[in-house]
Length: 175
Image (cartoon, rainbow, N blue to C red; front, side):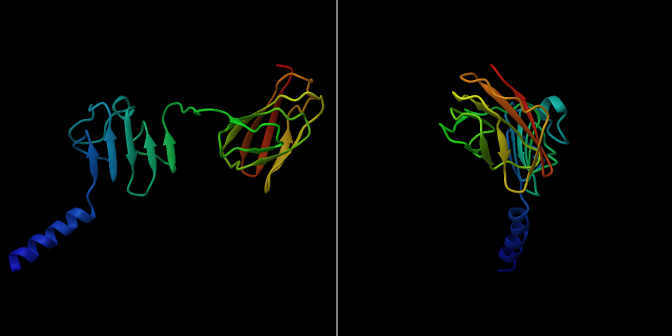
């Protein structure tokens, strides 16, 4: 009975603090995938070896292309939207769908939902009537670099850069 209790006690420590490594003998976090099977058997992989790794760290951070993410999600490389969000003819744009959106609405008052600090978003306005656009989002102040009048039946691109509670807007018209 004492042997069984000792074994169970020893195993409980392993189960509680174990890490899972797929294609790696030395996982760097609670869950670590080395897609190319090129990590060293011990130690931290170099930058080239990390380029194909996916990790969830012990403190819940997720890394793609890095084994030591410094934010909740860190991507070392490019990321791509599957598709842009089509808002139809609406002037309410939901950036939780994609950070790229387009609308057939004409220039006017737009409400931007689900923007956040550190985000970059692009909106294509493709309306039939010329005019100026203005933007609002709860908790944010908008500052425009060049809010030009749109040209009817062309595309006007608005880029939004969010830093803290300030949204910087840049406009390119007549595309």
